Amino acid sequence: MAEAARKAFVTGHPIAHSRSPKIHGYWLAKYGIDGSYQAIDVAPADFATFLKSLGENGYRGGNVTIPHKEAAFALVDRRDEAAETTGAVNMLWLEEGALWGGNSDWLGFAGNLDEHAPGWAGNGPAVVLGAGGASRAVIHALKQRGVKDIRIVNRTLARAEELSHRFGACVSAHGVEAAAELLADAGLLINTTSLGMHGDASLAADPAGLPDHAIVTDIVYVPLETPLLAAARARGLKTVDGLGMLLHQAVPGFERWFGMRPQVTPELRRLIVADIEGETAKR
Ligand code: ATR
Image 1 (cartoon, rainbow, N blue to C red):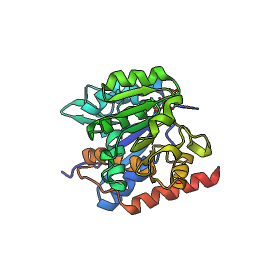
Image 2 (cartoon, protein in one colour):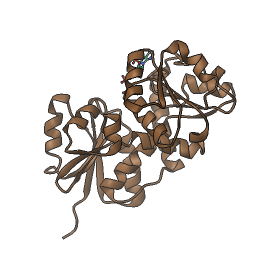
Image 3 (tube, rainbow, N blue to C red):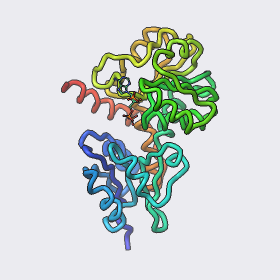
């Protein structure tokens, strides 16, 4: 008997904006895999029931996005190390009857910098703007890659301190007033806040005071060049936009559900850039 088509999904609420179906759809077609990947809108009240019925609905697993990442963390049977460390689950898979939750956002972050700024982890102290869920994935990636001095800058100092306690001695917490001093000898600046999204012109920190060798990256990718990246480029610094993080975080899930490790290609990037440009033009 032929094997049934493999099925995976992305769930969130709302979910219509998600670009994940385009990414996985591109890979399914490129590799000629008999499978599907669909967006499913699940309200928070229905999320636990949705998870319980994955197997009987024929799914191998899927991605989880806002607002379900913390609920997924609480509801799965087993978690990978990155999920434990970040407190959030962005991918699910069924294995020997157990529902597993993993976190691939940190791999997306590291994979994007590996592709566009090789050697980034040895570039010096890192300043991380923001202390939310995305910040945790970034800090986990920095630690995994051996960055020894990680400085969190956040509007609400208490949230930065909470992360500093969670991640240990190499991670320090600061208010925004300390940013200029912290940037003066930093090798990496990462924005994990929503500032700069959708044409908001605010800067969470001014890259003008960074050293010449610094690399600046933003996890916001709409617009592709955020005000922070534009200011860094004007200053002559190396910049990496956030789209690659979205593309690279999708790799481990696809490999689990569909059985082969896909490539993040220039063609895939162009496909998603066109989608973003279409969205930006509509605003
Ligand atoms: P996510 O899970 O996407 O990281 P989050 O948990 O809501 O989202 O975190 C958003 C981050 O952006 C926080 O660091 C937040 O700062 P506070 O902890 O002080 O709320 C930051 N942020 C959002 N809007 C901001 C603003 N207008 N100015 C400065 N920081 C902002």
